[in-house]
Length: 487
Image (tube, rainbow, N blue to C red; front, side, top):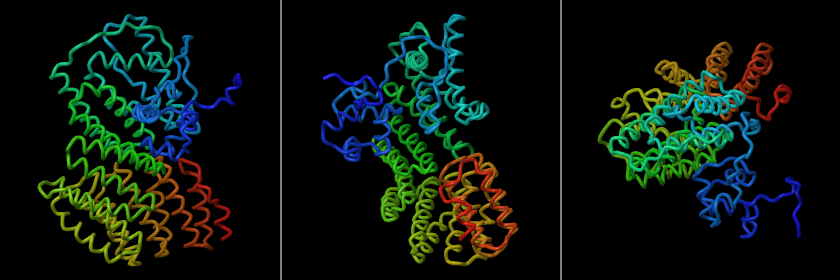
Protein backbone atom coordinates (compact mmCIF):
# COMPACT_ATOMS: atom_id res chain seq x y z
CA UNK A 1 0.00 0.00 0.00
CA UNK A 2 1.46 3.36 -0.96
CA UNK A 3 1.65 6.19 1.51
CA UNK A 4 0.38 9.68 0.84
CA UNK A 5 2.87 12.18 -0.51
CA UNK A 6 1.25 14.95 1.56
CA UNK A 7 3.80 15.68 4.32
CA UNK A 8 0.99 16.75 6.65
CA UNK A 9 -0.28 13.16 6.66
CA UNK A 10 3.07 11.50 7.23
CA UNK A 11 3.74 9.96 10.63
CA UNK A 12 7.03 10.98 12.20
CA UNK A 13 9.45 8.04 12.52
CA UNK A 14 9.72 8.57 16.28
CA UNK A 15 5.94 8.48 16.65
CA UNK A 16 5.82 5.21 14.71
CA UNK A 17 8.62 3.71 16.82
CA UNK A 18 6.69 4.58 19.99
CA UNK A 19 3.45 3.15 18.63
CA UNK A 20 5.24 -0.05 17.63
CA UNK A 21 6.00 -0.56 21.32
CA UNK A 22 2.46 0.38 22.41
CA UNK A 23 3.72 3.20 24.60
CA UNK A 24 2.17 6.54 25.47
CA UNK A 25 4.30 9.65 25.18
CA UNK A 26 4.66 9.81 28.95
CA UNK A 27 5.71 6.14 29.17
CA UNK A 28 8.24 6.47 26.36
CA UNK A 29 9.72 9.65 27.82
CA UNK A 30 10.10 8.10 31.26
CA UNK A 31 11.66 4.88 30.00
CA UNK A 32 14.00 6.76 27.67
CA UNK A 33 15.11 9.00 30.52
CA UNK A 34 14.05 12.38 29.12
CA UNK A 35 11.38 14.95 29.97
CA UNK A 36 7.86 14.62 28.57
CA UNK A 37 7.97 18.08 26.95
CA UNK A 38 11.29 17.22 25.34
CA UNK A 39 9.83 13.98 23.96
CA UNK A 40 6.83 15.84 22.53
CA UNK A 41 9.15 18.30 20.81
CA UNK A 42 11.10 15.37 19.36
CA UNK A 43 7.92 13.92 17.86
CA UNK A 44 7.18 17.33 16.34
CA UNK A 45 10.58 17.27 14.66
CA UNK A 46 12.02 20.19 16.64
CA UNK A 47 15.80 20.43 17.29
CA UNK A 48 17.23 18.26 20.08
CA UNK A 49 20.50 18.07 21.96
CA UNK A 50 23.01 15.40 21.02
CA UNK A 51 22.55 13.82 24.45
CA UNK A 52 18.78 13.51 23.93
CA UNK A 53 19.29 11.96 20.48
CA UNK A 54 21.63 9.40 22.00
CA UNK A 55 19.12 8.50 24.74
CA UNK A 56 16.31 8.02 22.22
CA UNK A 57 18.53 5.99 19.87
CA UNK A 58 19.63 3.75 22.72
CA UNK A 59 16.08 3.21 23.97
CA UNK A 60 14.48 2.48 20.58
CA UNK A 61 17.59 0.62 19.34
CA UNK A 62 17.63 2.70 16.15
CA UNK A 63 19.92 5.37 14.78
CA UNK A 64 19.00 9.04 15.08
CA UNK A 65 18.49 9.11 11.32
CA UNK A 66 16.11 6.13 11.43
CA UNK A 67 14.10 7.89 14.14
CA UNK A 68 13.87 11.06 12.07
CA UNK A 69 15.96 13.06 14.56
CA UNK A 70 18.55 14.08 11.96
CA UNK A 71 17.51 15.96 8.85
CA UNK A 72 19.14 15.42 5.49
CA UNK A 73 21.55 18.15 4.42
CA UNK A 74 20.24 20.30 1.54
CA UNK A 75 21.79 19.51 -1.81
CA UNK A 76 21.57 22.97 -3.35
CA UNK A 77 24.00 25.64 -2.16
CA UNK A 78 22.27 28.67 -0.71
CA UNK A 79 23.34 31.70 1.27
CA UNK A 80 20.11 32.47 3.10
CA UNK A 81 19.22 32.27 6.75
CA UNK A 82 16.79 29.70 8.08
CA UNK A 83 13.32 30.98 9.07
CA UNK A 84 12.94 31.86 12.73
CA UNK A 85 10.59 29.64 14.73
CA UNK A 86 8.62 32.40 16.38
CA UNK A 87 6.62 30.00 18.52
CA UNK A 88 9.71 28.69 20.30
CA UNK A 89 12.63 31.10 19.81
CA UNK A 90 14.76 29.70 22.65
CA UNK A 91 14.62 26.21 21.14
CA UNK A 92 15.60 27.62 17.75
CA UNK A 93 18.43 29.65 19.25
CA UNK A 94 19.74 26.56 21.03
CA UNK A 95 19.73 24.59 17.79
CA UNK A 96 21.57 27.37 15.97
CA UNK A 97 24.20 27.54 18.70
CA UNK A 98 24.75 23.80 18.36
CA UNK A 99 26.31 24.44 14.95
CA UNK A 100 29.07 26.27 16.81
CA UNK A 101 30.59 29.73 16.57
CA UNK A 102 34.10 28.81 15.41
CA UNK A 103 37.17 30.97 15.42
CA UNK A 104 38.47 31.75 11.92
CA UNK A 105 40.35 28.57 10.89
CA UNK A 106 43.94 28.70 9.74
CA UNK A 107 44.91 28.33 6.09
CA UNK A 108 41.71 29.51 4.38
CA UNK A 109 41.90 31.11 0.96
CA UNK A 110 40.22 34.47 0.41
CA UNK A 111 37.25 32.74 -1.18
CA UNK A 112 36.93 30.28 1.69
CA UNK A 113 37.24 33.08 4.24
CA UNK A 114 34.39 34.87 2.48
CA UNK A 115 32.26 31.72 2.72
CA UNK A 116 33.09 31.44 6.42
CA UNK A 117 31.93 35.02 7.03
CA UNK A 118 28.67 34.42 5.17
CA UNK A 119 27.97 31.25 7.18
CA UNK A 120 28.33 33.01 10.49
CA UNK A 121 26.59 36.20 9.37
CA UNK A 122 23.62 34.10 8.25
CA UNK A 123 23.59 32.44 11.67
CA UNK A 124 23.76 35.70 13.58
CA UNK A 125 21.10 37.56 11.57
CA UNK A 126 18.15 35.33 12.55
CA UNK A 127 19.25 35.58 16.19
CA UNK A 128 18.77 39.34 16.04
CA UNK A 129 15.38 38.75 14.39
CA UNK A 130 14.48 36.50 17.34
CA UNK A 131 14.94 39.45 19.71
CA UNK A 132 18.64 39.43 20.61
CA UNK A 133 20.60 42.62 20.01
CA UNK A 134 23.94 42.66 18.25
CA UNK A 135 25.41 44.04 21.46
CA UNK A 136 24.21 41.01 23.43
CA UNK A 137 25.69 38.66 20.83
CA UNK A 138 29.01 40.47 21.03
CA UNK A 139 28.87 40.14 24.82
CA UNK A 140 28.52 36.34 24.70
CA UNK A 141 30.76 35.63 21.73
CA UNK A 142 34.00 35.83 23.80
CA UNK A 143 32.68 33.07 26.08
CA UNK A 144 32.66 30.70 23.13
CA UNK A 145 35.57 32.05 21.10
CA UNK A 146 38.06 31.57 23.95
CA UNK A 147 37.17 27.88 24.20
CA UNK A 148 37.14 27.28 20.44
CA UNK A 149 40.61 28.79 20.14
CA UNK A 150 41.93 26.16 22.58
CA UNK A 151 40.24 23.22 20.85
CA UNK A 152 42.30 20.76 18.78
CA UNK A 153 42.15 21.72 15.11
CA UNK A 154 40.39 18.49 14.19
CA UNK A 155 37.56 19.13 16.64
CA UNK A 156 37.40 22.79 15.67
CA UNK A 157 37.17 21.76 12.02
CA UNK A 158 34.25 19.47 12.89
CA UNK A 159 32.36 22.48 14.24
CA UNK A 160 33.18 24.37 11.05
CA UNK A 161 31.80 21.50 8.99
CA UNK A 162 28.57 21.59 10.97
CA UNK A 163 28.20 25.30 10.30
CA UNK A 164 28.93 24.87 6.60
CA UNK A 165 26.59 21.91 6.27
CA UNK A 166 23.76 23.90 7.81
CA UNK A 167 23.86 26.31 4.90
CA UNK A 168 25.34 23.98 2.26
CA UNK A 169 28.43 26.09 1.68
CA UNK A 170 31.02 24.36 -0.53
CA UNK A 171 33.66 21.94 0.70
CA UNK A 172 36.57 23.30 2.74
CA UNK A 173 39.75 21.23 3.25
CA UNK A 174 39.74 19.22 6.49
CA UNK A 175 42.70 19.27 8.85
CA UNK A 176 43.79 15.93 10.24
CA UNK A 177 45.17 15.56 13.75
CA UNK A 178 45.90 12.27 15.43
CA UNK A 179 47.43 13.47 18.67
CA UNK A 180 46.45 16.05 21.30
CA UNK A 181 49.22 16.96 23.72
CA UNK A 182 48.84 17.14 27.49
CA UNK A 183 49.52 20.86 27.29
CA UNK A 184 46.69 21.37 24.79
CA UNK A 185 44.30 19.37 26.97
CA UNK A 186 45.30 21.41 30.03
CA UNK A 187 44.76 24.71 28.23
CA UNK A 188 41.40 23.56 26.88
CA UNK A 189 40.22 22.44 30.33
CA UNK A 190 41.34 25.70 31.92
CA UNK A 191 39.66 27.90 29.33
CA UNK A 192 36.46 25.85 29.31
CA UNK A 193 36.28 26.00 33.10
CA UNK A 194 36.79 29.77 33.07
CA UNK A 195 34.06 30.26 30.46
CA UNK A 196 31.58 28.14 32.41
CA UNK A 197 32.33 30.07 35.61
CA UNK A 198 31.90 33.37 33.74
CA UNK A 199 28.59 32.18 32.27
CA UNK A 200 27.23 31.66 35.80
CA UNK A 201 28.08 35.27 36.62
CA UNK A 202 26.40 36.29 33.37
CA UNK A 203 23.22 34.53 34.57
CA UNK A 204 22.76 37.16 37.28
CA UNK A 205 23.20 40.16 35.00
CA UNK A 206 22.12 39.29 31.43
CA UNK A 207 18.99 38.37 29.50
CA UNK A 208 17.38 34.96 29.90
CA UNK A 209 17.62 34.00 26.21
CA UNK A 210 21.20 35.27 26.08
CA UNK A 211 22.29 33.02 28.97
CA UNK A 212 20.44 30.03 27.52
CA UNK A 213 22.29 30.57 24.25
CA UNK A 214 25.63 30.57 26.10
CA UNK A 215 24.67 27.46 28.06
CA UNK A 216 23.68 25.53 24.97
CA UNK A 217 26.87 26.60 23.19
CA UNK A 218 29.02 25.49 26.13
CA UNK A 219 27.20 22.15 26.23
CA UNK A 220 27.92 21.76 22.52
CA UNK A 221 31.61 22.47 23.13
CA UNK A 222 31.82 19.95 25.98
CA UNK A 223 30.16 17.32 23.80
CA UNK A 224 32.42 18.06 20.84
CA UNK A 225 35.50 17.74 23.05
CA UNK A 226 34.16 14.73 24.99
CA UNK A 227 36.97 12.36 23.96
CA UNK A 228 39.71 14.94 24.57
CA UNK A 229 38.70 16.07 28.06
CA UNK A 230 39.89 14.10 31.13
CA UNK A 231 37.07 12.08 32.69
CA UNK A 232 36.75 13.99 35.96
CA UNK A 233 36.95 17.44 34.36
CA UNK A 234 34.51 16.43 31.64
CA UNK A 235 31.93 15.21 34.18
CA UNK A 236 32.21 18.42 36.21
CA UNK A 237 31.79 20.52 33.06
CA UNK A 238 28.66 18.59 32.11
CA UNK A 239 27.27 19.00 35.63
CA UNK A 240 27.83 22.75 35.77
CA UNK A 241 26.45 23.44 32.28
CA UNK A 242 23.36 21.25 32.81
CA UNK A 243 22.64 23.16 36.03
CA UNK A 244 23.07 26.49 34.23
CA UNK A 245 20.62 25.51 31.50
CA UNK A 246 18.25 24.19 34.16
CA UNK A 247 18.06 27.42 36.15
CA UNK A 248 17.41 29.39 32.96
CA UNK A 249 14.61 27.02 31.96
CA UNK A 250 13.12 27.41 35.44
CA UNK A 251 12.99 31.18 34.99
CA UNK A 252 11.16 30.56 31.74
CA UNK A 253 8.51 28.62 33.65
CA UNK A 254 9.64 25.26 32.20
CA UNK A 255 9.93 23.51 35.56
CA UNK A 256 9.82 19.88 34.45
CA UNK A 257 12.53 20.42 31.86
CA UNK A 258 14.62 22.28 34.43
CA UNK A 259 14.33 19.39 36.86
CA UNK A 260 15.48 16.95 34.18
CA UNK A 261 18.57 19.08 33.51
CA UNK A 262 19.40 19.20 37.21
CA UNK A 263 19.04 15.43 37.49
CA UNK A 264 21.46 15.04 34.57
CA UNK A 265 23.82 17.40 36.38
CA UNK A 266 23.53 15.27 39.51
CA UNK A 267 24.46 12.09 37.62
CA UNK A 268 27.45 13.83 36.06
CA UNK A 269 28.55 15.11 39.48
CA UNK A 270 28.41 11.58 40.87
CA UNK A 271 30.56 10.41 37.97
CA UNK A 272 33.06 13.14 38.78
CA UNK A 273 33.15 12.06 42.43
CA UNK A 274 32.94 15.70 43.53
CA UNK A 275 30.74 16.27 46.63
CA UNK A 276 30.49 20.03 46.04
CA UNK A 277 29.08 19.52 42.54
CA UNK A 278 26.69 16.88 43.90
CA UNK A 279 25.46 19.33 46.54
CA UNK A 280 25.04 22.09 43.94
CA UNK A 281 22.96 19.79 41.74
CA UNK A 282 20.80 18.76 44.70
CA UNK A 283 20.28 22.42 45.61
CA UNK A 284 19.17 23.17 42.03
CA UNK A 285 16.85 20.14 42.13
CA UNK A 286 15.32 21.43 45.37
CA UNK A 287 14.67 24.83 43.79
CA UNK A 288 13.02 23.12 40.81
CA UNK A 289 10.82 21.04 43.13
CA UNK A 290 9.83 24.21 44.99
CA UNK A 291 8.90 25.95 41.74
CA UNK A 292 6.72 22.93 40.90
CA UNK A 293 5.13 23.21 44.39
CA UNK A 294 6.64 19.87 45.42
CA UNK A 295 7.76 21.16 48.80
CA UNK A 296 8.09 17.75 50.47
CA UNK A 297 10.48 16.56 47.77
CA UNK A 298 12.37 19.85 47.95
CA UNK A 299 13.00 19.45 51.68
CA UNK A 300 14.05 15.80 51.28
CA UNK A 301 16.56 16.87 48.65
CA UNK A 302 17.91 19.66 50.89
CA UNK A 303 18.33 17.21 53.76
CA UNK A 304 20.34 14.90 51.52
CA UNK A 305 22.58 17.78 50.45
CA UNK A 306 23.18 18.90 54.04
CA UNK A 307 24.40 15.41 54.92
CA UNK A 308 27.02 15.63 52.17
CA UNK A 309 28.42 19.13 52.60
CA UNK A 310 31.39 19.75 54.88
CA UNK A 311 32.40 22.59 57.22
CA UNK A 312 35.98 23.16 56.08
CA UNK A 313 36.00 26.31 53.93
CA UNK A 314 33.92 29.33 52.93
CA UNK A 315 32.26 27.55 50.00
CA UNK A 316 31.06 24.77 52.31
CA UNK A 317 29.73 27.28 54.84
CA UNK A 318 28.01 29.26 52.10
CA UNK A 319 26.35 26.11 50.77
CA UNK A 320 25.14 25.16 54.27
CA UNK A 321 23.69 28.64 54.81
CA UNK A 322 22.03 28.48 51.37
CA UNK A 323 20.55 25.03 51.92
CA UNK A 324 19.13 26.01 55.31
CA UNK A 325 17.72 29.20 53.79
CA UNK A 326 16.00 27.20 51.05
CA UNK A 327 14.59 24.86 53.69
CA UNK A 328 13.19 27.89 55.54
CA UNK A 329 11.68 29.19 52.28
CA UNK A 330 9.85 25.91 51.62
CA UNK A 331 8.62 25.82 55.21
CA UNK A 332 7.24 29.37 54.90
CA UNK A 333 5.29 28.53 51.77
CA UNK A 334 3.61 25.58 53.50
CA UNK A 335 2.84 27.64 56.64
CA UNK A 336 5.34 25.83 58.89
CA UNK A 337 6.56 29.10 60.41
CA UNK A 338 8.18 27.59 63.50
CA UNK A 339 10.40 25.40 61.33
CA UNK A 340 11.06 28.33 59.00
CA UNK A 341 12.22 30.52 61.87
CA UNK A 342 14.49 27.79 63.23
CA UNK A 343 16.13 27.18 59.84
CA UNK A 344 16.63 30.91 59.30
CA UNK A 345 18.38 31.11 62.66
CA UNK A 346 20.60 28.15 61.75
CA UNK A 347 21.44 29.76 58.43
CA UNK A 348 22.31 33.06 60.13
CA UNK A 349 25.08 31.41 62.17
CA UNK A 350 27.22 31.21 59.00
CA UNK A 351 26.72 34.77 57.72
CA UNK A 352 29.74 36.29 59.46
CA UNK A 353 31.99 33.69 57.78
CA UNK A 354 30.91 34.28 54.17
CA UNK A 355 31.37 37.28 51.91
CA UNK A 356 29.19 38.77 49.14
CA UNK A 357 28.46 36.24 46.43
CA UNK A 358 25.87 35.81 43.67
CA UNK A 359 24.87 32.39 45.00
CA UNK A 360 24.10 33.24 48.65
CA UNK A 361 25.22 35.84 51.18
CA UNK A 362 23.90 38.13 53.90
CA UNK A 363 21.67 39.98 51.42
CA UNK A 364 20.11 36.64 50.40
CA UNK A 365 19.39 35.86 54.04
CA UNK A 366 17.88 39.32 54.61
CA UNK A 367 15.55 38.77 51.66
CA UNK A 368 14.35 35.48 53.18
CA UNK A 369 14.00 37.07 56.62
CA UNK A 370 11.94 39.85 55.05
CA UNK A 371 9.71 37.29 53.36
CA UNK A 372 9.21 35.52 56.70
CA UNK A 373 8.26 38.80 58.39
CA UNK A 374 5.85 39.62 55.56
CA UNK A 375 4.10 36.23 55.73
CA UNK A 376 3.77 36.53 59.51
CA UNK A 377 2.31 40.05 58.99
CA UNK A 378 5.17 41.93 60.64
CA UNK A 379 5.30 44.50 57.86
CA UNK A 380 7.57 46.96 59.66
CA UNK A 381 10.30 44.33 60.07
CA UNK A 382 9.73 43.10 56.52
CA UNK A 383 10.31 46.59 55.12
CA UNK A 384 13.50 47.00 57.13
CA UNK A 385 14.87 43.62 56.02
CA UNK A 386 14.11 44.27 52.33
CA UNK A 387 15.72 47.73 52.53
CA UNK A 388 18.88 46.23 54.05
CA UNK A 389 18.99 43.51 51.39
CA UNK A 390 18.55 45.96 48.52
CA UNK A 391 21.25 48.28 49.90
CA UNK A 392 23.72 45.39 50.13
CA UNK A 393 23.21 44.26 46.52
CA UNK A 394 25.44 45.42 43.64
CA UNK A 395 23.43 47.25 40.98
CA UNK A 396 24.20 44.71 38.25
CA UNK A 397 22.72 41.66 40.02
CA UNK A 398 19.36 41.83 38.27
CA UNK A 399 17.99 38.45 39.40
CA UNK A 400 18.72 39.12 43.06
CA UNK A 401 17.27 42.65 42.87
CA UNK A 402 13.99 41.37 41.48
CA UNK A 403 13.72 38.72 44.22
CA UNK A 404 13.86 41.55 46.78
CA UNK A 405 11.72 44.10 44.96
CA UNK A 406 8.72 41.84 44.37
CA UNK A 407 7.93 41.12 48.06
CA UNK A 408 8.94 44.70 48.95
CA UNK A 409 6.20 45.98 46.65
CA UNK A 410 3.65 43.67 48.30
CA UNK A 411 4.76 44.87 51.74
CA UNK A 412 4.25 48.52 50.83
CA UNK A 413 0.83 47.65 49.43
CA UNK A 414 -0.21 46.08 52.73
CA UNK A 415 1.03 49.19 54.52
CA UNK A 416 -1.06 51.33 52.13
CA UNK A 417 2.06 53.30 51.07
CA UNK A 418 1.08 54.10 47.51
CA UNK A 419 4.05 56.23 46.48
CA UNK A 420 6.49 53.64 47.84
CA UNK A 421 4.70 51.00 45.73
CA UNK A 422 5.13 53.14 42.62
CA UNK A 423 8.82 53.71 43.34
CA UNK A 424 9.44 49.97 43.87
CA UNK A 425 7.69 49.05 40.64
CA UNK A 426 9.79 51.58 38.74
CA UNK A 427 12.98 50.14 40.28
CA UNK A 428 12.03 46.65 39.12
CA UNK A 429 11.22 47.51 35.50
CA UNK A 430 14.83 47.94 34.20
CA UNK A 431 15.89 44.58 35.68
CA UNK A 432 12.82 42.88 34.20
CA UNK A 433 13.68 44.19 30.75
CA UNK A 434 17.26 42.97 31.10
CA UNK A 435 16.24 39.45 32.12
CA UNK A 436 13.06 39.12 30.05
CA UNK A 437 12.22 35.83 31.85
CA UNK A 438 8.62 34.71 31.41
CA UNK A 439 8.11 33.37 34.93
CA UNK A 440 9.40 36.59 36.52
CA UNK A 441 7.29 38.71 34.18
CA UNK A 442 4.19 36.77 35.24
CA UNK A 443 5.05 37.06 38.93
CA UNK A 444 5.60 40.78 38.49
CA UNK A 445 2.29 41.17 36.65
CA UNK A 446 0.46 39.40 39.49
CA UNK A 447 2.17 41.69 42.01
CA UNK A 448 1.13 44.77 40.06
CA UNK A 449 -2.43 43.45 39.81
CA UNK A 450 -2.32 43.23 43.60
CA UNK A 451 -2.12 47.02 43.78
CA UNK A 452 -5.67 47.18 42.41
CA UNK A 453 -6.85 45.06 45.31
CA UNK A 454 -4.90 47.16 47.82
CA UNK A 455 -6.15 50.47 46.36
CA UNK A 456 -9.48 49.52 44.69
CA UNK A 457 -10.89 53.07 44.42
CA UNK A 458 -7.72 54.99 43.64
CA UNK A 459 -7.76 56.29 40.07
CA UNK A 460 -4.01 57.05 40.11
CA UNK A 461 -3.25 53.45 41.00
CA UNK A 462 -5.47 52.19 38.18
CA UNK A 463 -3.72 54.45 35.69
CA UNK A 464 -0.29 53.44 36.99
CA UNK A 465 -1.10 49.72 36.77
CA UNK A 466 -2.45 50.12 33.25
CA UNK A 467 0.68 51.96 32.12
CA UNK A 468 3.08 49.56 33.86
CA UNK A 469 1.58 46.36 32.50
CA UNK A 470 1.83 47.67 28.96
CA UNK A 471 5.56 48.20 29.45
CA UNK A 472 6.34 44.56 30.27
CA UNK A 473 8.86 42.94 27.90
CA UNK A 474 6.47 40.05 27.22
CA UNK A 475 2.73 39.88 26.76
CA UNK A 476 0.54 39.64 29.86
CA UNK A 477 -0.63 36.37 31.39
CA UNK A 478 -4.09 35.10 30.56
CA UNK A 479 -5.60 36.98 33.53
CA UNK A 480 -7.03 40.12 31.94
CA UNK A 481 -6.66 43.60 33.32
CA UNK A 482 -10.30 44.48 32.66
CA UNK A 483 -11.53 41.52 34.70
CA UNK A 484 -9.44 42.68 37.69
CA UNK A 485 -10.93 46.15 37.54
CA UNK A 486 -14.43 44.66 37.69
CA UNK A 487 -13.68 42.58 40.80
